[in-house]
Length: 94
Image (tube, rainbow, N blue to C red; front, side, top):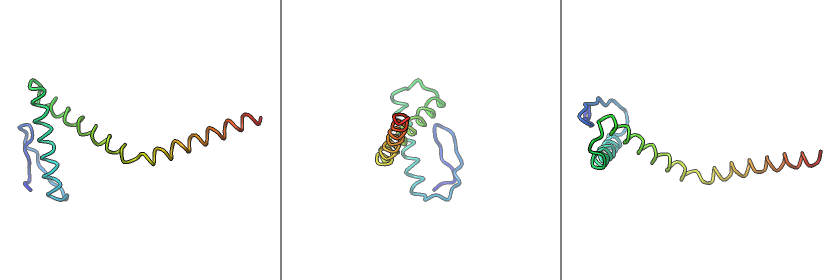
């Protein structure tokens, strides 16, 4: 892994203890996203491209996190429903 990478014409120093393979895969992913956005929005500035890449990756990460948590969310909703039922029962008993 190089000590720096170039993205959107900007040289960026990279100092990390992460696995070099992970860094390379991440770099390729970002480069692919940059090319996709530049193709779809050729008039976009470098800043706009960088922001769109960030938003795109954040959206994918958020979607993946939501997909990984359905059981947790279901349990949370059931707990809240039970709390509401208890409160309604307490109100009825008053």
